[in-house]
Figure 1 (cartoon, one colour):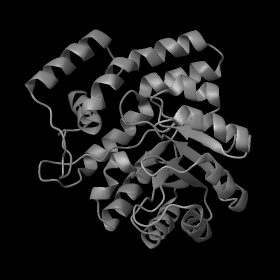
Figure 2: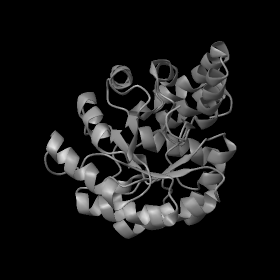
Figure 3: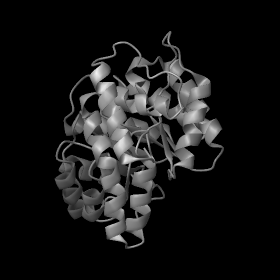
Length: 291
């Protein structure tokens, strides 16, 4: 496997209280919950952590709390995606100082995303730190050919988080272009197909981690039938929460007693009504733990 990051590295969601403030106790409880579920690493301050709703100071503080609570039990990578390169560089330097194992970032959310712009952005991140850099191919997509060009120029670029809509085909293309030069981590929604195509793990959300971690370990051991069973256990919940990916997942964590409130920071987007809660209750009852 390329690099040292592999397996299931879930995004640590940001728990908020009823006022919209970050609940530190719940952050720490969630970190320990994910480790107990079998996570191979943690990803702090990603898009699913609602990083775009946090101030720069909150982002650095949140990264510090996750790294501190993890207590070096597993690697913690930190998201530094931002509107501008300057902000991303500041966040990356802070993450390195805190002890992050790597930083991950999309292209800047403002400005061009052609290859020269990508060279400037990821080149600045690579120059600013001495830890591995992960390019996140998500809402702002980067063509495999451009990723290969960046990898040839930037030794610090050691991983890709591949979660574009056509992620499977992109993983295949990246492996064809790069061999083992880069580690590839997917979003986890199609974990077994991703692994078969050459991914070495995934960065999913904060639910379904026990199933995905078990499926990864079984796949790695060569027991593909058992891996399929573990993966399939998570599919009903994974499909249900497409209606409200983050809020639905937080509600599962609330029901598990991991966080106190299933709250998003404004703007909140789609909400759950009584029928959604009833369906979730029925679904979880049919699945049985772990969730």
